[in-house]
Every structure is written in structure tokens, then in C-alpha cells.
Image (cartoon, rainbow, N blue to C red; front, side, top):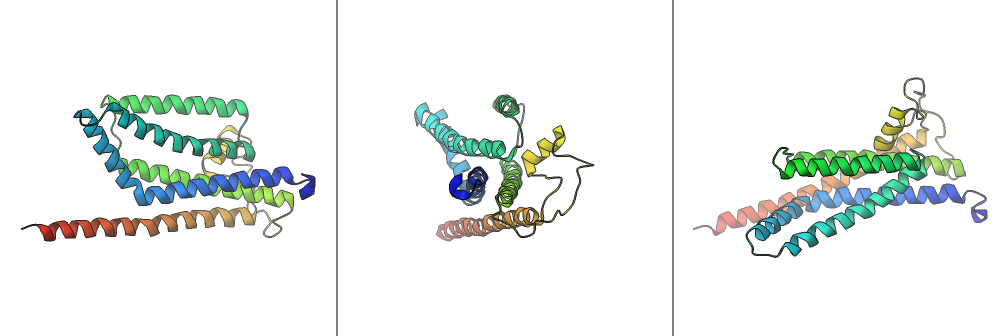
Length: 227
């Protein structure tokens, strides 16, 4: 901290938040480009395991790698929430436990055939939530940089909705954690929030046409090869 004139904690928190933003952005962009292929590959592995063509360990490895990758992002996400001051340690543990239970219940219902969630809608909703989450973390990183004195532009308050929904209320903390809501955002926070959303959506859109173009080319080749 003395190296940065007493602002070391703010810089560290901002760095962690920006790292989380980068990983969440990479997740959305990578899924936009490879999500369909991964879903198809996992489906093929599941069919092969069910038919006895592959050992059950193959499916276990696929699931384990997926959990490991997502788990690393969850760690950064939770630290980002802690650094942003969105909730207490007890609240994070309680929320994590509820999330695990909700995920397990949803998985059980889908396994038993009592619940069906179309994959495209699931990925669309999760991608949207991750985009808003990343934008909120980026805006909070700017707030830390402003507190440290490294961002001195657009420091004015854009609006004040603390009378309607305060950051300190239960709903306010929930919305702040999910989409980065702030009752008194600065101009720089709002600009970074919107810019982050635009960048993520732009990168995702730039990846989708390439995937569709390859798919269309394969379809055309297959049709041309038919007698």
C-alpha cells in the first residue's frame, strides 16, 4: 500500500474485479463460438456411454473438466462480490449453499424428466446474466479507482435512487450483486457499464457468424456430395 500512496487495497480490488470481468467476457465469447459444438460433443459422449461404446469414466472426465473450469470462474466471481462489498461472508456462504441446492434440485428434475429446459434458451439467459454481471463488476472497479484517485473524470453523480432502492437494502444488495445496480453511480461508472455490455455483445456477435458460416459450408458440401 505505501508504494501506491495508501491506495493499494483499492488497486488490488480493482485488479481482481477487472480480472473477473476478463474471464466472464472470455466465457461468453468462447461459448458463443464453441457452445454448440461442445453441447453436441457431450451429447455424443453420453450416447456412446449409454450404448457401452465408451466407459463411464469418459463422461466423468468431461463433467469434471467442465466443473473445474466453471469452478475457477466462481472463485473469481465470489471474490469480486466480496471486494465490491456486495454482501457479508455469511451471506455469501448462505447464497452459495442455496445455489448448490437449487442446482442439484434442477439437475434431479431434468434427470427424472420432470423439467425440460431448451439449451438455446438456457445459454441465452445465462449469457445475458453474465454480461450484466461483468458490466457491474467493471463499474465497481472504476469506483475503486476513483476512490484511489486514479480516475478523476466523470466523477459527478448521474442519479440518486437511494430513496427508491438503496444499496443497503436486501433487494438492493441482490440487484447490485446480479446486475451491478448502484443507487448513486458516477458518470464514469455508467459509461464503463454500458461500454462493457457493448464490447461483450459485439465480441459475441463477431464469433457467431464464423460458426454459422462453417456450419453452412459443411451443409453445402454434404448436399453437393449427395448423388
